Length: 405
Image 1 (cartoon, helix red, strand yellow):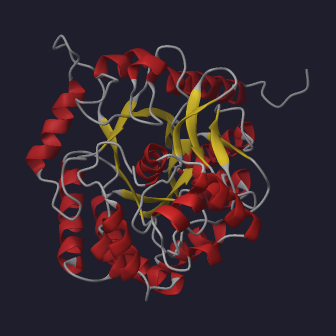
Image 2: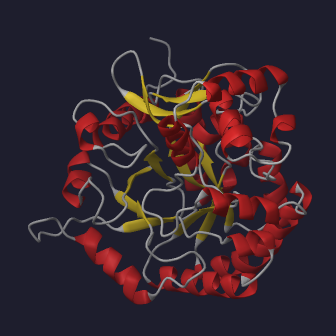
């Protein structure tokens, strides 16, 4: 597996020098400042490549931009309204520009309105470390009492509705505002940030869009862009819903293995692939991550390796972002399946036999607690996770792996 690191550009508190010292082999980044739907120009792509290519003292870093994460899909495309056809044309143009610049893998998602959703961005653990958390009752308090979405209470179990009411009653105005900020926080460094009114407007526009219709829109999008990617030698890989269940009454179409299989079958070409995110998918107990890697591995183009610890085994529930080896997902089994897939590809002579991976998210530990980096993206917490993952990979790759002592 090619070990990569997500970087948010020159404003990221983790520098190119830091990435190099962490020992990563490639960089995952995006043009976060470009508004969604606009073209990624050759000039902007070249500038980001130059920023990656040099250390602070001007020495070559030896690092390259390997994965674009994310080339975002606009809300107009998802809803097939407004400028959606122009946005698809722009998406194709951006793919041409990325391919010309040597970027081979493009990650994206098809989540309506919000990107990943958390209720607490700095949840304190018994060790003193902090992490991101999704609390189902807090989210219900936001949805029912802060956003005041029509009929929101009907989407939650009765005990959760009661707990949400109690929690909301005990929140100060500052606490309410903090919860709202956390829920609509979205992606660090993104060009757009939603207000509550923006969220309400987008939700209203999804009233007539069922999961089946959203999936049809997704297939329409892929039918246009995936053949372009195939022709350019690019690999597209869709990130799952995060968390992988319905929120805000919005349709979700990439939460389970069945969801992925439906999309892979509908546009059945190699370029149409998967970002297997063990943290997002692992928040749902009926997702079998090692099994998904075995069964869908042929189309896994990118790996996000992180772990979550669920409070319960309910399909919709609370969870926090655990240490990479400390959550509910069997990371050793996932990595064993990924290495087996790489061996199959190598035997077949596939050029893409080495799957890029990155240590996704991380707990804030040690000096991370003072640096206040982007939520989920601390330097030391991710480095700790990468070191743990490297240890597993090295052990499983050893010639004696699997033999009894």
